[in-house]
Length: 149
Image (cartoon, rainbow, N blue to C red; front, side, top):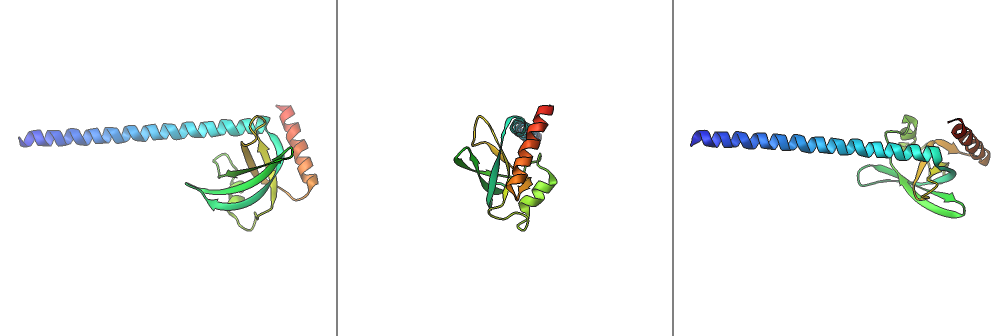
């Protein structure tokens, strides 16, 4: 009887370990796939997005990470969005996002907007805009970069 109990406990432990490993692998694959989809979406924005001007609104703690919110215009319509630091963002962008001195309410930045879905956007904190001339210059550089591809 004692051997049967030990054998049953061993089988249970092995089953639990196999289950945990399986769950870990599934979670890892899901994470990798999600990151791949985010990368594809950001590449699409950079390749085919509309360049516009965005205005930083505020920082807040989201469900899982710190987020920033911002407004931007497409045509004459105003949109609001939120963004978190993504692994594809530059280190400088992450530093700016977390630095309360470098970024204040009302500061302007370049925003790339999906040309087919204006609610899908990405604020580029590496590109602060202090004068309208800087905005126009960046739009021109962005247009030239695309024509080279």
